[in-house]
Length: 172
Image (cartoon, rainbow, N blue to C red; front, side, top):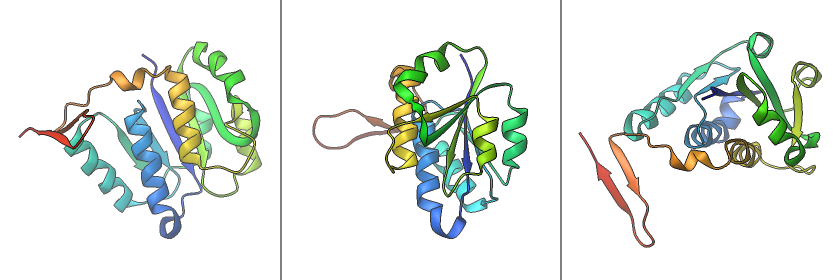
């Protein structure tokens, strides 16, 4: 199976902590293996590690990375999610068929034009202002063809699907 990573650009620690945390949570839940963040944020790392420890999974996060190096050195397909790109429904099948791992780039603030040039695909999940979390979730769902739903995390806590109420299994 291909490795999937997400690169979060423009993380502003004081302003984006919840949004970037949600990017990480969506990434983990929808089958991403690793997340890179361009600004060092130890609190974000602790939060994500705590979720993985409780709920399981092999998801990892690395903050304080040089985003240019991550994109340039990536040995696989590089997809930048933006409202200015080609329609994702047109591109996702072609991207899925490419060999190699997948790097998905999502921005927080204005993304440098260099990102558009370094990416193999600039993909729009709609051409209107929207949440990068929603764009990432939609893209990952289509890219994996919903297979993320079959993943089992084997953590200390497992939420059991239920029509009504909360069902949780706790393991030691």
